[in-house]
Length: 372
Image (cartoon, rainbow, N blue to C red; front, side):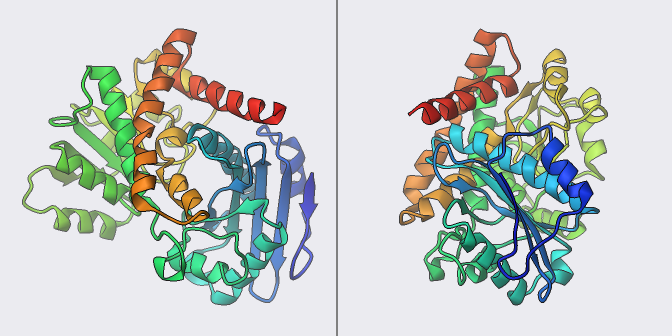
């Protein structure tokens, strides 16, 4: 079902957007809501992929999409990914995602976030939101003033705070599982890890890697983010910056590549250039298109599915709905290690790439939930 609605002002969908909704290869979405509030400038898309396991849960991305069609396509893709992520994380939640169209640096305002909160609330709990690219804890505090279905709030407002801490911890556990599968030991000491994107999640991941004795190469489009990492870990001799992601993936001696920025990092250009034999990172939707997972497998590169290893954050925000306990959440996020190994084992037994094995396990859980 597709809703074109407006809690403040009815939205309207261009033919281009409607084409994306009905022709999307992602398919199978239960509901898509196009939101518009002219007073605040809000234009947003809320996509609910599945509620088979429970209310759809996924963050709100605030991003300057070039077109409405691009925004809708991203929301659909991200929502579907959340269904799979939540299923493999063992959560009683389906998958959903929202995107707000525009530059958060210039468009974001209290009025806009409150309007967005009204849209989320109009869904009556079918969709639970949280932070994503371009949105932060302070933003969720504002959204929560208009809906109870906002997580990722500050502790002062009854929330769990920054979910990037456990997202990074989960990626770290997935990386340890990848090392165990590839090299026979989960230790990352002495390994060289390249981290592309050292923002909200990436900078925490760098800390885990350095604490274990890994050598870390970093890059980010934002020079200030790179500078903060270099200053924070000055004197360790174990972290250095490279010019860009293309340089990073081609660096000789790289053991693990960790994409931690936006999606599509693994594509027809990057996969042939990779020197690393393991890919494990925090970015969503790392595979640019179907078939890339086979290209990685054919090259002997072990890929830890992104939505499996980056589930620490969603584990945290889901727990917030029931009274947040950090230690309980960290214990759940630590299980990402075992889940990742389970996926590698399933991939080997089925003779398929790990991404396919992960999808099969997630789909099985969702089907079983629908059948009761």
